[in-house]
Length: 274
Image 1: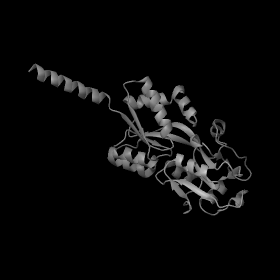
Image 2: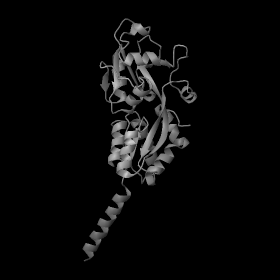
Image 3: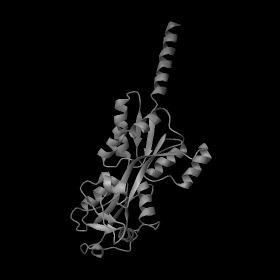
Image 4: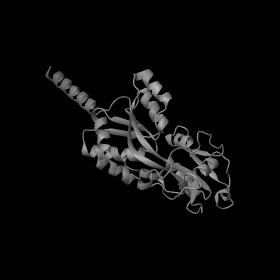
């Protein structure tokens, strides 16, 4: 009897411990995955009892997991779509809660040997829709423009299509790659390549300055130009939940918005929310 009681107590203890240690899952944007992982690591170091699990897959994948109930938090580099809100309402009777966690200047990358220094939004649209196909058409060498893009489940892909291409389709010549790091890697090896993605990933490539139109000054993404609105392709990065956060999820998000958390955001290469 004593052994049975002891076994029951141990079993109950393990069950309680397992319940208490249930991780908060964060899934979605590949643009945000490094930042979220570093935030989670720092938060768990300060809160030893908490577990935050971060995975990527793309903004669309994260929001689908939120709708399906398989993640606690969806990381998204774009605003949630009306169709996604409708699915949340149908399944959970909620519109969801979106919390901006950082800001990003969506960078345009070219190879370090490319002489092109700046492009307008119109030129970018013409390049990625296939109207412009040679670098000499935008002041570069006589060479084909090789397009690198994100996959269509990516929030970065959607943001670029909506805000730069004005909803037009990407050129069929665009090579879609999984993750911004893959885009940067491809451009770094291709003298004629061009890509786009989060500013934090730009290693081994150079930024092209971007301007709103031919009469405007061109800028690279920085804290000052993103805050002022001078850099024309900037966006918020979001964490989405089904309802107002509670427990460790709330603690994690609240801490990520503190000066300490936002300092990590900055060190990764993104910009504070405020």
